[in-house]
Image (cartoon, rainbow, N blue to C red; front, side, top):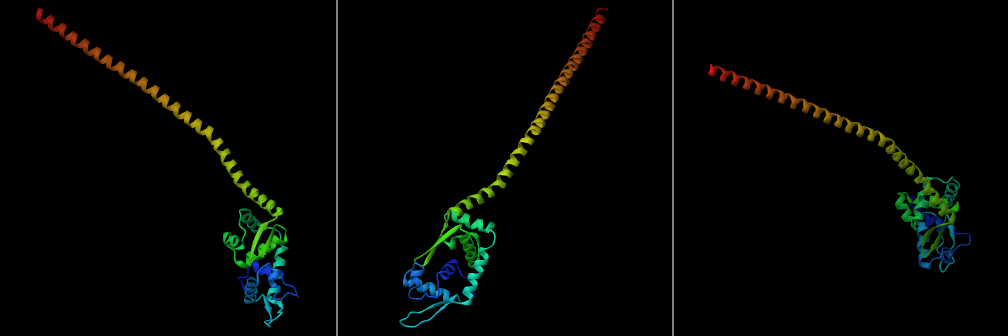
Length: 230
């Protein structure tokens, strides 16, 4: 089976019954004859169906073994528990994505994996889809919308817890920082006070030296005048 099978291929396969004909295939998938022929041709090219080509018809459609295996694989995937990738699919839909290709591109998945994943969330009641005019659109159900909200809330909780932890750490570090700052300011004040004391001592020492010099000079002058007078 081709690896490039898409969800629209699976959705179209599921519309085929034992009585489905090429001529009436469009009414089964809500498409024009032209669009239905393109889809049928794509399914045949991918090996999912086969059909007769009698003119003027009717021409029956038969699901091949590869097509049946694809449906069986999708059913098996749908029975698996809901997981984080399913949450990511619902989140993309909640953001406004409606086409499988948009979600596939956002999640970087292969077409086949995307098809199986979308079928899984569809079977579990989280999305519905609509085949129309050769295309397919996806929509969230109420259950899917609520599930997407729960997933967003769960994803936000660890981030909030981390932010709260960081805020608490900052509060614990703030008093220590304030204490350090207080100690620094106190040390600066002590140094300044000590400097003032040293400055005062230096001033008194200079004053004492000058006073001694004056005494010495006066004494010499007195001695000089005494000698002259004798």
